[in-house]
Length: 334
Ligand code: NAD
Image 1 (spheres, rainbow, N blue to C red):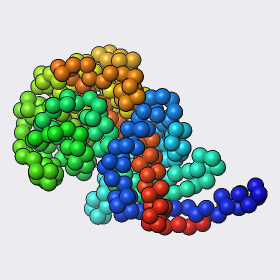
Image 2 (cartoon, rainbow, N blue to C red; image 1 turned 90 degrees about the vertical axis):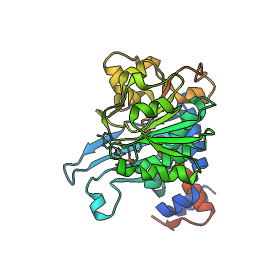
Image 3 (cartoon, rainbow, N blue to C red; image 1 turned 30 degrees about the horizontal axis):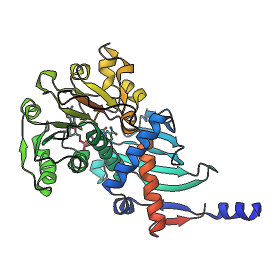
Image 4 (cartoon, rainbow, N blue to C red; image 1 turned 180 degrees about the horizontal axis):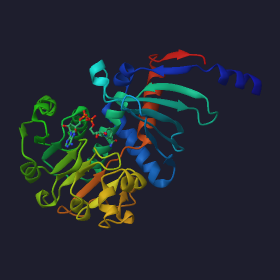
């Protein structure tokens, strides 16, 4: 009997789930549900990320790394391998390249190889969306976008589903990129206005920053009471999108405190002594009902979305399960 079971397990094919299939089978709602659940599991200690490996290759100017983890609650184990190849655009490829490998947590067997580029965008958008759902004022009407790169459209589309927004305002260092954000607003039937950063902060109730900046783009004096800011661009040591004084005057939430203080937006406020690690709240605590979240309509809340491997793994798991169920995965026997 055991022999038959083992033979069955050994015969299970390795599934290949393409970028195209991921886009077809993983919706924004799926990503939101999966990311919210895993943030909750992380805060309970039921899921954890392993140390991130990120290296400059000394070849093709590339940065390459692994993000991995284990979700014991959802039984998802694996890694995302990927990085940044700045010369790719000239070759007709996106500069960020990601692939997810999922392993059976009971046997260690490789279960699936899943395209990670679409999933990275949709899981990053889900992260800021989860923060908006749990932390933004219920009456938020204007959303402000700082950044107009590849991720920005995914971010805005997902965020618009969290509140009854009535207007989109945006800024980018290169204004010629703003039509990408404007197109999403138009698609949602909302008015769009390009504004300078101080004017954007005066209007916006929710702000998403999604840039590759290395210096503060938003100043403390511009931020009005009650604003929710999701800082999504800072995912590496040295990057920065906002004035550290904003974090000192906010309640700061994050996906993972260890990343927030080392590679996230909070690295600057923490290293200057203005913010204690212990003051940063895992958003999973809010999701689990262990922290009240926003305490008043005047409070500034800031979500430091650093991007953890488990986000990739749980959305890849959805892709694998759906692709298998719908017969859309390619399969091979290793
Ligand atoms: P992209 O290259 O398509 O766009 C970059 C954006 O940043 C553009 O709006 C560009 O104008 C702006 N920008 C570039 N240099 C800048 C500078 N010095 N100052 C201000 N703005 C600048 O990149 P993308 O795929 O949209 O990703 C945006 C950022 O988000 C990147 O930094 C990326 O590493 C980060 N990211 C974070 C996560 C996460 O989970 N937190 C996930 C994916 C990407």
